[in-house]
Image 1 (cartoon, helix red, strand yellow):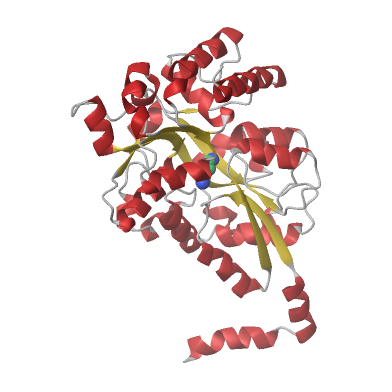
Image 2 (cartoon, protein in one colour; image 1 turned 60 degrees about the horizontal axis):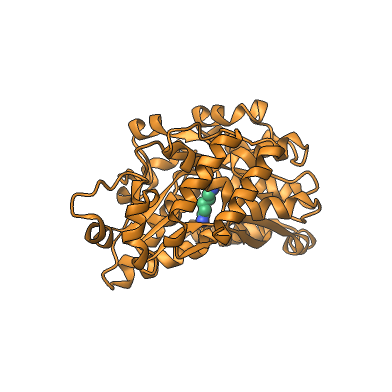
Length: 366
Ligand code: N2P
């Protein structure tokens, strides 16, 4: 009884003008697609009276394009630690976060936060939201049928060996449209430094991609890849781990016999960390801090991980995560798999140009 009265009491304790003012407040969030539990956003509004305008992007290139002009109007953005967040920190484009306004900061895993402190000394500008890897979503039966029942399902060979790609072409090969998040994995598969900016290494990556180009059906936004995997339209797709796992769950629910698996490359997967950050010119930084504080609550974070199948950086959320998600080694990679992973760096402008040019040639197919 008393519990049911509580929200009412809380409401009455706000004076009416204060309430009206709160209801006018709108927080503008710019986040990755399929990257939150919608009920968390609704709960934030319910608890604070702050409405949320929620826009999405599906590549770092899109996010960088939107932010580079300045005055994006967003209060919250979620760039990957490298290269995008690192660049924004360096450019002074992010607002230092006031820890006193974010008491749940204490929930963050200090070991993970230390990893991103290299590019954000003292972790002043961002909290890790979610993290994951880059790998392949595959239709297990189709890949076995095309490449043989014993094909190892833990390597980028499935995609990048031209003879494999040729055999899989008919069932639908797709690559997410993001040089930033694709090229490092290709370099690593070639046995080269995934962060190399040497023209010769980038040429080798281009050759590898061109070698499979005519077998690739689509180079499209990561959000479209998620859909194509879920419907069975793609049988091999290079994209983000949790997107594959979400697609697998959707395919299972649809019950049409599409079985999707995730391949974390044994050559070493690209590991990334996405950061909750506030643009320097955010119109509403106080509410942005409130939103970050809200998200860092263990139960809220557990709900997000359950929904989007990406691990978070709040250890106390772990026992609250569904057992099946908690035990999924594609969501929470083993220490052994993590020890083989690598984190991408931040290419200097000149190398960035080489990468962009390589990518346009890959997309055009010549
Ligand atoms: C969510 C994409 C994951 C973010 N759809 C990749 N950093």
